[in-house]
Length: 160
Image (cartoon, rainbow, N blue to C red; front, side, top):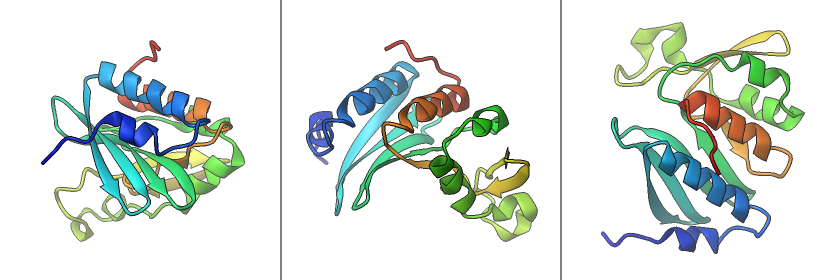
């Protein structure tokens, strides 16, 4: 399979999203992740996997509604402090994610599932599937919060 250059992805997103995408790419690559770029119906996707575990930790996805990022930290982490300051649109996206079946009854979900995340938003407890809990639109308002989620969830620091 021919490797797709990162520039193909960058050239397919808006100029406003480009610096952020490059910053996150550098942060994740410096955090010992590898990226894989694929072409899809609505544009490119960039998946970041841990170089040690080979598990996906984040992914940019192009959708008709715009660029999104899915953050899938490899281990449970406390994000309640981050949730308190999130913009309403990010809170809404987190609340809308699918509930984690494995957290409520481990026997009803695939045993290979890494389990979802438990967090509190505005005093309400949520248990969401790891694939949908942290799927955010990449907007100017959301960018600083997305960066904080990546830093905390993956235990890496932004040095760019």
